[in-house]
Structures are given as structure tokens and as C-alpha cells.
Image 1 (cartoon, rainbow, N blue to C red):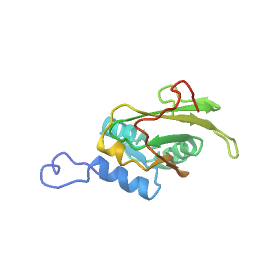
Image 2: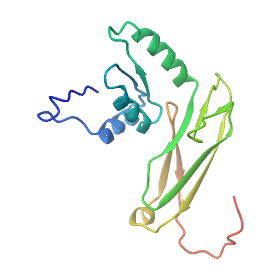
Image 3: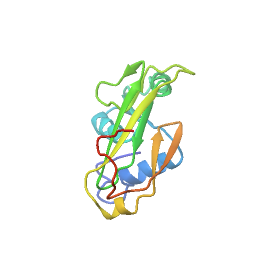
Length: 166
């Protein structure tokens, strides 16, 4: 992603959601490097699961080191995400994790090759919306590793005991 303040008034750039969709579709985790506008790229990295942002030196001689360091971080991170569905509250927490992320319970860090990590995912209907009524499946994305498809039957009324947890 290239951003030039002077050109921004005359050229259309893809939206963050368009960039995000393509990254997810092709299972790409970006490493964003910038020198002058690093805060912009840090904010962008914060909304793209798995993405990182790092400071590039003025002559870019640290680019190889940045890529090596950031790739190491990415390859040792397991992150779970679910696309937002209006009316659906999703809670994701690492259950078994060597180093839980302090800011995001859906991220597990310092994971070594062949190390098992577990996440608990809970879904709650917060509001009945047309999207909830039409919800038949939900993709839980394990960033960089693929999707887990969950098939759903949305029950709006049942004679089940509300105190039973599964």
C-alpha cells in the first residue's frame, strides 16, 4: 500500500476492507514498513489480523532485518478471528497458550513448531437481525493456517434448559 498525501485527492486507493478481503482470500499476512508515516501503517496493521508494522531507516538498509524479525514473530503467532455478523457477539480466548497476548485474548504468541494451542470460542445472539436469521455457517479463521467452518442452526425458541453449557 502506497500513500502520497498530494496524490490522494486525485487518485482512488483501495479501501482497507478491500485490502483486507484480498489478504484473507489469498492467505497473506503483510509486513508493513515505513519511515515517515509509520503511525498510519501501525493503525492499518492493527485492523488486519496478523499484520505487522515496523520502522524503516531513512535509506532502507534495515529492510532485510525487519522482514526476518517480523516473519519470526508471525510464524510464532496463532491468531483466531471471525468476521463480524450484525447481532452476533463472538468471544475468543486462548485456553492453552505459551504466551497469551496482553491486548488480545484471540492471539497466542511464542508458539513453536508442532506445539498445540487451544482456543475457546463462544457465540451469543445479542440481537435478532436478518443476518442472524440467515446464518447457516460461520468461518472461524486461524490466521495463516486456514479456516474452520462451523455449521449453525439458529434456534430462536427452544424448550432447552438455559443453565446447560456445552
